[in-house]
Each structure stands twice: as structure tokens, then as C-alpha cells.
Image (cartoon, rainbow, N blue to C red):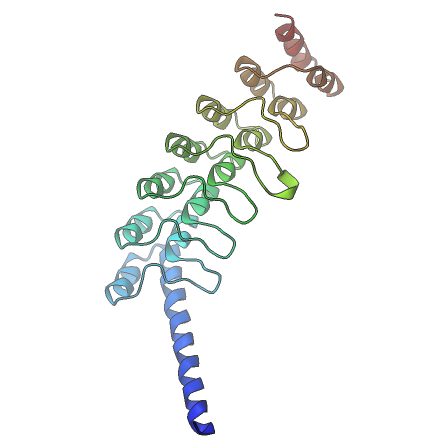
Length: 244
């Protein structure tokens, strides 16, 4: 093939790539802003609802991340893959749980989203929802069978569970949902931190009471920690509970 012909082929391929990216970005941007007319037009012209951007993000991920409930329904109805993942392992459900839109979480789960999928840092959707205090999302995930005792694989949070994340967020409501769903109140992370000890550090009496009343073991370390935190109310509660 002659040089001029090769140049023409290269230009043609480049134009196709640019055209592909333009369409993908147009669809994703429209999904994120809730522009149903544009998304409907593109899909009706034969554009796949799952066309990704260079980082693997899809329209459904963008809509889930931006709380666009009607758009999420439209895309699912158009065959969008609810378990697609981008280059960082994020799925539409992970985006929705980080965003905290309970209606979108419910819709994605109803469409078959994997409750226990993890992104590349080892966080599950339940961990993200718990760490942000999004109790509606947590409730939907627990009902759908998410593993409440799964452990985070990220090196800074190694062994952290959704319950530990919720305690750190000081979300009593999320902790209640997780415990009702079977979360182990005595499961520690890889550094040996227990949910009760974390609640003591945060000086959060309602969480301390919730954990103890649901079987958290009051260790000597927990008592020493409460004493060191100079929180007499928590120390007195733990001492009384330990003597029962």
C-alpha cells in the first residue's frame, strides 16, 4: 500500500475514533444531566446504552452518580448493563451508594446489580453507603442480601467492615440496620480495632449502648480506653454493664 493510501486509512481510523468518543461522551453527559430526550434519540439511532468513555464509565454509572432516577430507569429499560465496571472497578451500584440515592439503589438491585461487587480498593457498595451514613441505601442492600461482614481490602482500612465504617461515621441508624441484618458486633479489623472501641474513641454514648446491648464484649481494653477518654458517662455505663 502506498504512503498516501496509508495516510488516508490513518485519517479515516482517527476520524472513527473521534466520532466514537464524541458519541460516547454525548450520551454519558446527557445521562448525567438527566436529558432523557437526547439519550432516547441516541439509543433509538442504534447507539448502545453501554458505550463507555476512555475510563470505562457508562451512561448508567453517570446517571447513578448524579442521582438521576428517571434516567436510571430509562437506561435499564434500554438494556444497560447494571454490573458494568469502569477501570477502577466501580459499578453503577457503587456510584449510587456513594451518592446515597436510595431509590436508585433499589432500582439497580431490582435489575440484578451485584450487591457484593468491590472496586479496586476493595470497598463494597455497603461499605461506601455505611461510611457516608446513607441509611436508605444500607437498608436496601441488607434486604437484598449484601454481605454485612465483608472485610475491606484497602491497605489503610484492612479488615474494616460496614459496621466499623458506620461507627466511624457516628451513624446510629446505619449501625442499627447492620446489626439487625446480622453484622458481627465483635468483628475487629486487621489492626485489632473493635466497633465498641471505635465508638468509645468517638465518645458516642448511643452507639456504645447499642453495641453493648447487642452483645459487644466489654474488654479490659475498652474500659481503659473509656477511662483514658475522660468520658465518665461512658465509663460508668460500661462498668455497670460489665458487672451485670
